[in-house]
Amino acid sequence: MSQKVAFVGVGRMGANMARRLQLDCGHDVTAVYDINKEAAGELAAELGAKSCEKLSEVTAAADVIITVITNDAAMRAIFFGEGDNLLQGAGGKAFINCATLSPDAHKEVYEAGKAAGAEVLEGAMASSISHAREGKLYLMIGGDEAVFNKHKGILDDLSLNLRLCGVIGKAAETKALVNMVMNINTAGLAEGLGLASALGLDLKMICEVFSQTGANSRVLETDSEDMIAREHDCWFSAEHAAKDSGIAADLAKKAGLNLPVNEATKAQYDRLTAEGLGGLDKSGIAELTFPGRHGNA
Image (cartoon, rainbow, N blue to C red; front, side, top):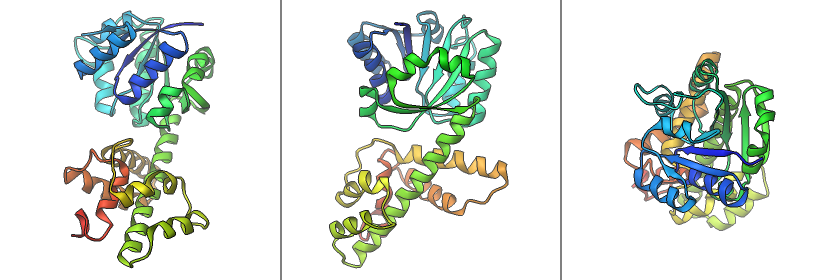
């Protein structure tokens, strides 16, 4: 059934999700909101939606509000901001929050939404910009099963695969683990290729050997050529990698676990960010490991 949908956060992921629902699936995207007013205005014109000045206008314009924002602070701002927020007039509305945030932030919004008479799901994404446009996201969902089932249609329209991970917070925990392991693999690949380069080995040969042995990984497929060619156009930023490895570190601390490999990986991404390279793709960590580059000049 077609529903009125609004988006808060229309960067590359959010904008392509909106295009997917409106242009391919018959949903009516009625409103968009972003702190980047130009981006919001352009997408609104493309889809025939309203570019809202206030968050409460977004809630009023839709049945389902999908948020795709950057971090816990942004999440709390859009839901709890004084004077204007998404929970104003939220009774009977549904929120699907698609961002890699701490479990605590998702839980806070869930409880506040429930108090306001709204339904809340978390929809953590593990996919790329092209997947967002094509409806091929891998979505990890957290929330009440009945609410998940109620909104499964719109989630199916956005995704190739869905996984209900448990109650609110469990999808965020799962996504933190996904990104932790991905970031560790990326850092490991960067060190392996960097050392291979220092030894004068043929990097194309090394990648082929890696692919046939225990050194194989998904990031070998997605990042190795970019690391070698120094092409770090951003699909998933180093800054976000640092943030997400930090979420995993916080979870480990609360669980009483020591994760030294994650801590080392986070330190590398923190260094990239501190040196002004946080906007590079996560493959940019190779700039700290290859001889003659930023980190080893």
